[in-house]
Image (cartoon, rainbow, N blue to C red; front, side, top):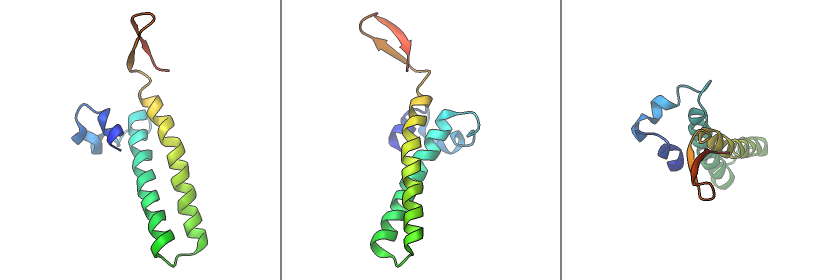
Length: 96
């Protein structure tokens, strides 16, 4: 989550940044990273301290896993327009 906030010019603007899910990879990154941690914490509580059914535990685990897989992909897409220094060409290129 801290990495997601590092992309922003103003980290306090994160609540506004998430409002543009349809067209902004940065918004999607914040969304999926936040839901990953929420679902992970919920799954942890359900597994250790709850009498919830196995179906609910499995569902939260799978949803957390899905968000955990999608979040790094959206992180890469959000950084696509960033300029990285290339030591061989001594220039700037975009990632990936």
